[in-house]
Image 1 (cartoon, rainbow, N blue to C red):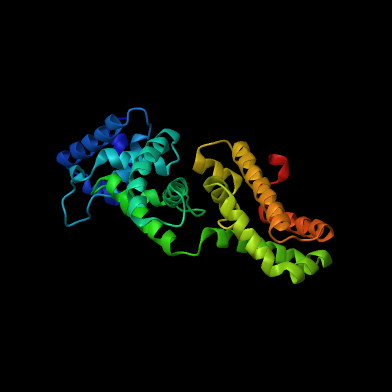
Image 2: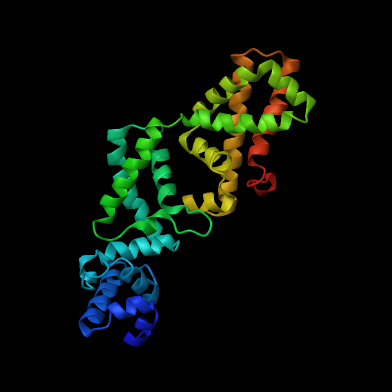
Length: 293
């Protein structure tokens, strides 16, 4: 791509700032620095040029992209675009930074779940919006910026409602919805409501960190199977199998708690398990149909 093509990709305001030979050379040098640092990652030159120009300090400051960390910006740009290679590189950086923060903050979750929380914070966007990684401005090291994001995310997690409670409340809410029109569900809720809440919380606490995270993504965060697959870097069918396995693990642990700790009579057990299994299915049905597992 020649300089004319590069400049045409910029907005009118950006072109006005890159109107001198020195500014053009500085922009081309920054683009070259980013692409050289990450030769295995492909971001189209016009896109990265616009990305850089949007992060150069505005007037009256002179146009000087050399003040930005072009290599880190290139990686962030590629991650925002969903580039798998770039996201794998970010994962390595993120793992190291989250481990440092985790040792200080000690949130109510395991290290793997903490990494997923931060990863979600950086890479999952609302419909029509860019992910948070796009907010990185390139004025300081990306590693430091990720650590700050991790600190805020995990501090919030440390003071938030326990995730087991959040998960159980979500699924019990679905059971309540079902019981409004289902006589068996209404009876079960009336007779065992408090005990079921405790059983849900205990069962959720017995799941692995990944199982809890998967179910929370599905029931609390309302993520689709494609979004969960993207978070973990796996095909949607694999993500669906994982969620299905987590659902079965939760149901199995619920059965054991109902039988061994609550000592619910066998006849009542059938109704309770049927209603609770239905609540789990209802929680997941919109995004994780059983035939995808």
